[in-house]
Length: 523
Ligand code: G4P
Image (cartoon, rainbow, N blue to C red; front, top):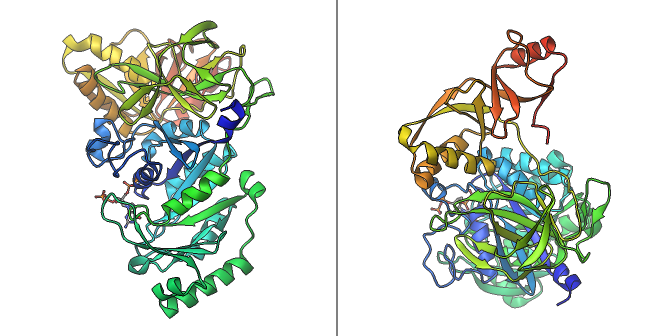
């Protein structure tokens, strides 16, 4: 297939939602439809533990949360779909923000009873800043929930986004029977599925079809006719350009756990979701996906993907050109050429070596420390894309090693996990031996503690610190007795100060007018 044909059949997207809306379940069902798994929670030919394959680290399994983002590829009707897994828990939103830099569209998943929730709002903002086209999937229709029109109004009020129904629910709660597909006028009626199986389609046809009509009560038929009238008269018509501009959102209804409406969603999704497009560069230009030269950027680094391998993987999204195993590419930050011999594609815990890959695909590069988030690989000369977002820590702890003999593993673990962007490590100036960790959410410390024990065999004790913010210093250190807070160096040796409150920050800034206080280290 040509480069252009491979680009056109790629769809790279992420699901954004508040925890518990059903993202893991929907992911499983999409993989099921794509034939990537043959039973929800299992990779083909293997018994799974009842978790989506994206949910692979032990802490995730123990706590039932998805902590890290990985990407999974599956085929559907000739399309190659890359689904970026995004953690639902807000303490890991940085990971999600970064994953969104690798997506071409997003699916906003709502619980029909709860509508738009806090985490959905935050993630929506990031997706919309990136101008990503947004699909909306309203889940859990098998449970009592809010009126569809009410949800449409909420999305419009909060986000200024016009949600335009592509499907419409027939019944709700225990009487949820299926969906009406507006584009075709087809009705799909389902019977609830047994756990892990596709829902049984019990009827498909138009409203005029007597066999379909028979499966609905007179009341349900009337309600559906009224709803269709309402949609056609009151709601705006779907406009693909407005969707691509982020002004309209195609809206779907279903129940992921029962497999209702998931296939209907996927049919429309592959048709409407944008293929990989151009990516702006810092010099004001853009890299077109079909340019011959290969370019990619790292949006995620993950240590110990597989404990048996003990390796670090850098996930890179291909922006342009064909990737071939063994090809040379420039590591733009380090200004050196690399031979990319062992690129992997990951599927949960499974990994396979890839011989070729295309724009939109996610490559897993084994990373013995040479890749950082934001790094660019290019066979087309030096290219710089806009930075992958970084976040300033707001929570801090001191970390003490329980067994001083394990210091080597401790330092290695700290460094490797910090490279992933899970936490930031600060060393008090003057050589105090206890590092201070900073993170956006407290759960990240727990993950670090668990992973240090599990992956690096060292037990640590965490002691909360009352700092609230970190500022990196440009222009040197403040004068003695003219600062408040604690002077520290970050993992790269950059000078910084940790402050307990805004008064300390302001006063220190006033007393040291020659210094600049930055929210992130200058690159
Ligand atoms: P998340 O990744 O967004 O956090 O959500 P997840 O898929 O884990 O789903 C959260 C809960 O919602 C799960 O129930 C799941 O089964 C349920 N769920 C998902 N989709 C639907 C749906 O369409 N209808 C209904 N009624 N429930 C749905 P749980 O009790 O937490 O776990 P489990 O024991 O069912 O796995």
